[in-house]
Length: 259
Image (cartoon, rainbow, N blue to C red; front, top):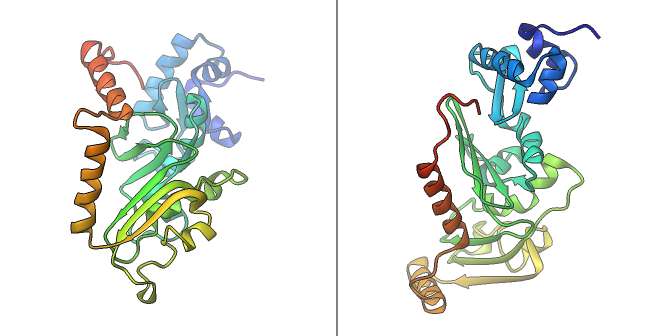
């Protein structure tokens, strides 16, 4: 196979149906060292032809997105998560959009992952990587209103994006509400009945419906948590975030390093 010229890399990858590549694969494609390939990729990124969602991973940008300098998150989230060894599913409003249930287009792309991961901001477009435990997240609903199905739909959204993967019903759910099913406020969102039959809540989960005004129920719930865990309790995710911030402050990434 003839060597590809650096300026042809993006179009070559798109025409061969492999838009996502690693630094090593680009070096092999160009027939140069990884250092030389990295320099070529920096130039391609500046011209909007290549995009790097994380260090060592590169995405060829189609012409229609080159003024933006990136591609939609759905185009690279799966190889990005696989490269990092993460289990994940598209979540919250991003999942609702895929199901045609979003009331507006999300401003960030939201993903649940199996261990703490920092948000990524790609200038024109932002990818928000939420923190959650997989395969069994939990959910708390406070108050009423229609619709309230967005957080429920995260439990089934994985099937829409990665077909063939089992959904992850919430292992525990609490809903504080005064809604009545007759008026649609609990349509598809009851954690003790309909949510279970639709696969959003686990039948073996700890699912509780509390029919009370949230101004009464929420303070009681918070007081119960305080009494149970004590005022000095710190969640493990918060410890990880604090450690990550401290590490960045102590040893920031060298300036100019491509991401």
